[in-house]
Image (cartoon, rainbow, N blue to C red; front, side, top):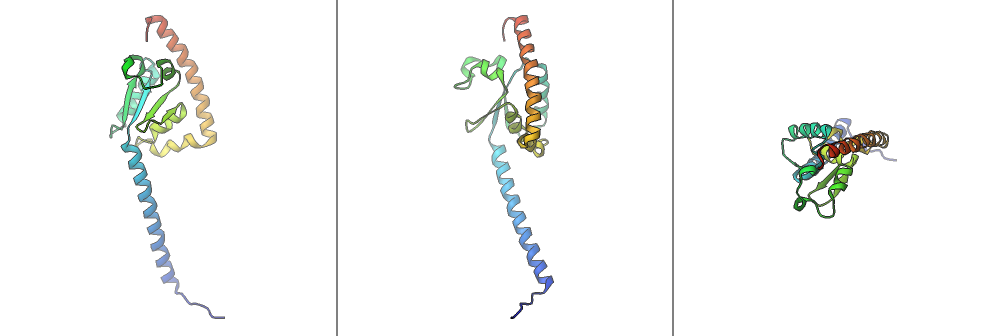
Length: 162
């Protein structure tokens, strides 16, 4: 039986070169995917009468240097600007985000879509895909929605309109 002798130094160099090339190729793919995602605009439909929503939107606007997010206040949106197939009531019922390809994200998924576009939050957007944190986020979001519905009803009764 014949053994092949390969010097360890040669093996290490080749192995490191290969790993470096794989890592570099993977990085290029990740960068291309991130560039593609951020080059497509997202349209966020939000409740401009909601004080919490307004504060959150202000924060997102500040940390969106690429201006990749388009903001539409549902409460002041004219009927001709409403997205096809969506009513004002549907948009106010749960948070909606529309991608430039027409794909809709709602609720917790809408937050994940927004976070994935913002450089400051991008590395944290994965939390919405982890089952445990996703369920926790959904639970808190449902509590917020209950409060928001009561607040919206109060605002509507006070002003008589959106």
